[in-house]
Length: 82
Image 1 (cartoon, rainbow, N blue to C red):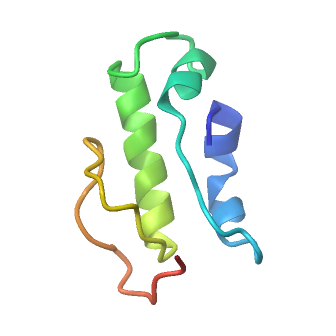
Image 2 (cartoon, rainbow, N blue to C red):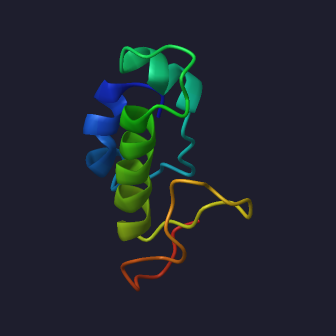
């Protein structure tokens, strides 16, 4: 997900059968939100946190590296999808 439009449609995307992975692109997202090059901008971090919540609430797991905007562990208690 690299755009504000993608973020707005993320809930539907993560529930789509056949989708195997979700990747967040902070640099392109920053550009889409009007703050190019500012991956640390509050609007970008807030959108990334929102997207992380959407994905974890759908039962997805994140890769093993820490995401500075994420909260630990799956939030929903559902079986992880990937």
